[in-house]
Image: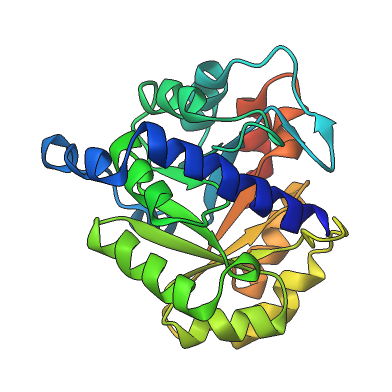
Length: 259
């Protein structure tokens, strides 16, 4: 079992417990009192290169990324320095994230938020809605076609945006086949953690007209961003390279400096 399969196996156990403590009907009962969240794709497209800046403590590949860790302050810096949206990790066991971090960030910023999670159950989509997300990550590599179709439909029905993540040509075709209009190309192989921007350069050629393309992972320099823009990416998702800097906000501004 590779690390991605292990994370998802653990996630199914975790969500089963969440459903016992807070059934999905209980989450859905809260929908009517929620205010509309800002549009995710519109925010990404409303700038020369959208930046989804990530808030996370650690990862299986990198270990501890930032200590001390203040999610509200990090998000405030990102928003003040040109980020279009904030990605916040929901997984606690492997990434140190969770609902508390998401709520702290949501209460600090006005820009859209991505519910960055290993989604394996409809419960998580309902949870994303009540948490105030604008978008929900779906990882093609861990979902069947029927799950992918169902989850995309459920996310859209709640007025949210699915960000459908792929890593290779087969996954890209699956994302296209289910009608994805916002596709994240992960430059990091989640099974081996090998990372290369060539993944974006290869897969963007398959993207359908009008699809919003997000390049994820391994983006470290303003030159990387300029090259990705020239290649046709509309947005980038960056976390580790920003979080390792003294000021994540200044690092975000620098990353966008050639655009």
